[in-house]
Length: 104
View 1: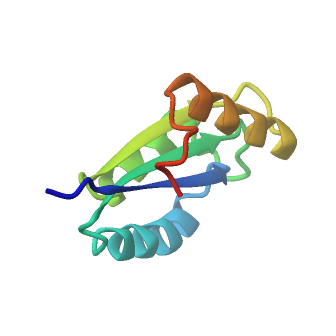
View 2 (view 1 turned 180 degrees about the horizontal axis):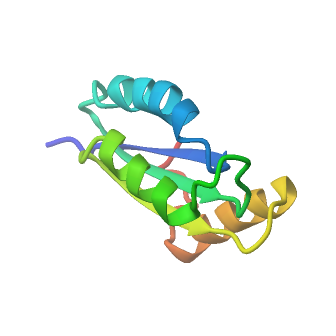
């Protein structure tokens, strides 16, 4: 019996569902094909919107387009900051004990 490989996908995002519907949906479908992997997707959603979409609406939209086979973690940031988003993602990796040699 072999142990499934583990893959962590990290994404920084803003509230742009029209982009997510194209890009994230496509990536999710491709990741779904990796049957030998346990996949963890960590998504930081910055508190920025030029179109009135909220972080919660963005999260709900992502939930509808990301495969149920993928364990998804969401971070709803208080402010927009790419370095801050990266730091948030690293903290989720550490907090959930995903930082080890078993993950790529």
